[in-house]
Length: 586
Image (cartoon, rainbow, N blue to C red; front, side, top):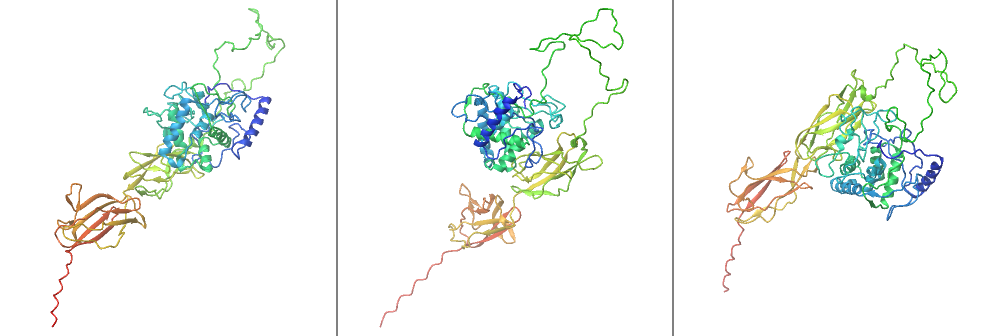
């Protein structure tokens, strides 16, 4: 979370007592099953239902633990001390921030209607991550006035995530830091970032961009956030902590009861962080200067010039008394050994290997029946577990992973293997490349080639059995309709061609007999660009006969080789012979 955020208060005994009362009340009035305690980030137990990457949008960075007030913010702000006991209250959501959340909800309703993303969930996460962009301190375009940065993820009390963006987002070329009002780490923003305000940029410091990115992040994997299980999984994927899940759920329920808009820059700043401020950069001081608010104490009594100090005589500090110098911990002349950080699993990865993926092929619109499997290995070929592998669909294609995303990050298992989500073929046919790379490690990527073929059918049948007949110069009463299938299943969106052919052995277009007509009424004997509908049905336009009588053939073919030949008959109508006159009676 933002290291430069407001004050960091440490709770005393009185504060703890007030917080305990508030938590008890909340547990009785809010979401069932939510635990009452709050732990530091180091003590939080990650859920086994966390995202497949075993990571998070935020890199499991610290977050603000302030609880919501006991009363709904609708129709007006609450008054009096908040449940944290610090006197803080929820003053509403800053106007620009609230607008960004609602616009993101609207965009996701259109892009991923099955996700059912409520804007209140974005508000809950935004409150916990950055206090609604530091109380709405954003400019007219929604960009934070000052950058909001979490502590560097150097493994010292936090996750160890080495720099992935060369400091482009967090101005840190050694370690990653969570960035912006929704606290994305750079490696996640690289694929999850969105342009929410249509300015042509994807900026994690802009609340419109960050809110839309958070919405898409929470809606991946085909999650339906109206279902509690999927909602839990989505929140845990943002920050893998049960305490985080419980806290976000409380703010979600709070905002669902109603909220109100406040001017930008007037929102409430949170006080308490999950790591209790650990990792926050200390306030810089000027060498030799006295810190503000402190009184200089008496210094050592100066020696008279030219008076040598007796060897072994302890110095008297200015405050009186004597001190004995501490013996050195390292013998003089001994080389000091700098502390070393043990290598992470990621540090040991030398290369990626295919783990038996096999041939990747699918028809347009279908799911691939194989999933990409990649193994991370050391230089000696030993498998490496707990390494994040990023799979990226590259190039001009509409093929995606399940859920419509072009990027997925998965952690290797105990065998060093990461299995990507299922690929879903788009409508663009041809070759597709999926690249596997190691997050946080500059090793060569591994490319997988996939092929998307056009939709196909292997069988065609007529949907009716009425004879297709017509008088010369007339119009066929029935239109030809066929149904296409592939391996017994409906074959929708399959390209087809209909041709009035010369004979069963000569598939060229006939120059006489029945025909279709174009928009100008001209004779057409070959129709291209036809496609079956969602039910696999194809209904041809009306057929017309010229003056030629006889039996004619209509052949329909589809991509994939399905063929059906239909007989058409053109014959003059039969006329009944007049009855002979009756013989006169005798």
